[in-house]
Length: 34
Image (cartoon, rainbow, N blue to C red; front, side):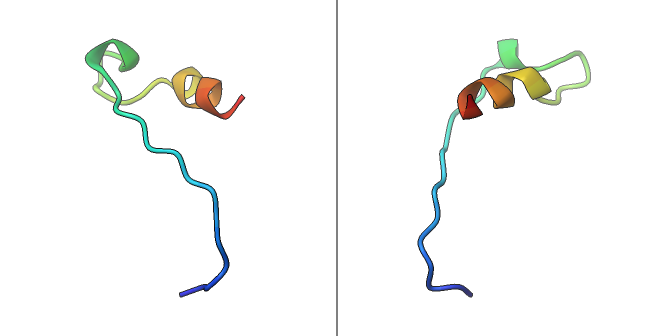
């Protein structure tokens, strides 16, 4: 385990953020990074 700090974001995904397979759209994740 590293002792170096790191950045993290925690976001609750809603059903509108998923596709018919129940996985998260990549664009949703990228929008939080941008």
